[in-house]
Length: 253
Ligand SMILES: NC(=O)c1ccc[n+]([C@@H]2O[C@H](COP(=O)([O-])OP(=O)(O)OC[C@H]3O[C@@H](n4cnc5c(N)ncnc54)[C@H](O)[C@@H]3O)[C@@H](O)[C@H]2O)c1
Image (tube, rainbow, N blue to C red; front, side, top):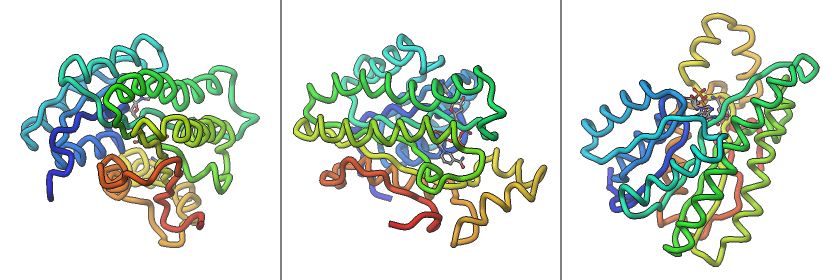
């Protein structure tokens, strides 16, 4: 593996586990120095120690709720304060509260938007200030293929992720002349520990999610991280404003 992100500094949110941890691992393997952020402080400490050890890189961590403006500001500024720059922001923090729209409560609706949209919005808002000074930046959001195919029970989640997709196109245009690209990677079902648990506890539900995927299986986390790694690289300089599905064909075009 070439270290194509050597000298790059990346912030990865929601990096204590799941897809975010797989992305952090891939960017570390590519040579980036990292700021990892999450609600889960013990998880962050564990991830950080492992990545430093395994990939001979430097890692800083920030624990807190990234839908809180102050936490997002502190997290993004930690990159420049600790490492002198910020090249890559991966807005991965999020996750669905997947249930029929009518069964949501005011709190689950609010949490869905906070967790998936406000986290990305605040972090991006602070990141562009630093990236504009450098005339370079890569912002990669985690969206969702369910926005395109209207998956069962995903209405509230899709409202939040649809907001992330919208943020992508608007920011891409606004910052195109500043050397900043903004893209979204939109997975379908992914083989996270959570998905493994669902497959065990409710095989019918897991099969329902996979039934829309022509390749016939969930994505591996590394397959999502691979697309993020490409979009995070200097090589992806002419790709901006895109929502790129990593979805086994569950939507096409
Ligand atoms: N797993 C899938 O099948 C799938 C499909 C499409 C999109 N996605 C998206 O990919 C991303 C990662 O998904 P995952 O399955 O790995 O999720 P996950 O729940 O396993 O991990 C998400 C991480 O984000 C953190 N987080 C959540 N809200 C936060 C907040 N407000 N502040 C700070 N940290 C916060 C959590 O603590 C957790 O560690 C999410 O944005 C999710 O919506 C996942």
